[in-house]
Length: 233
Image (tube, rainbow, N blue to C red; front, side, top):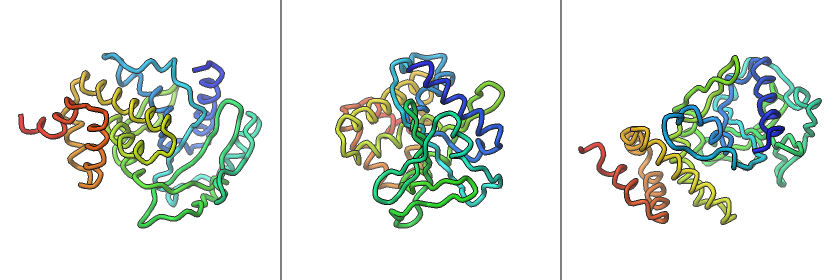
């Protein structure tokens, strides 16, 4: 990970904190892997220095509860971010040579392909399935003098095991699966196998089947044993 990319990421978080909107977001996507480093400080963990991603994704779990009125594109404009649009539906993304900032909301019901407008923030967001799972169990990590919301690593890893199977690009699917497995093993080595089991068991049956399928494809027999047996020991 290049230092200038990391510094840009930090500056975005600082500005969101000063604008009093950071608590409205949960950071999701590959940047979580980097910010989990302190959570896993006592065990072997992913070498985050090798991570390369331009995508900085924020989940807005309760967009109707936002109180502040902040024009995010304008807030980041002087950093070199340009408002662009992705796909035929017109999803807003803030584009920079080093980072792409996008926003997401949990899909409700059957969902919609239309962007979800968040007028108080001057943006729109894409509604995706399974995102509630990332926001229902979160942790806080301290960044300088403020805190950042992240999905609990268990939720993050299990979510990756679901969505990697929906990826069209094989290289990205493999990357998601491998990250999920590395985080699960870090959790096991940290002594949190029971948490993996309990959160897995709290998910709907069709989600459990997808997670099991992902682990079977990866030939992760030991993790499968944890999901099925740990609570009985």
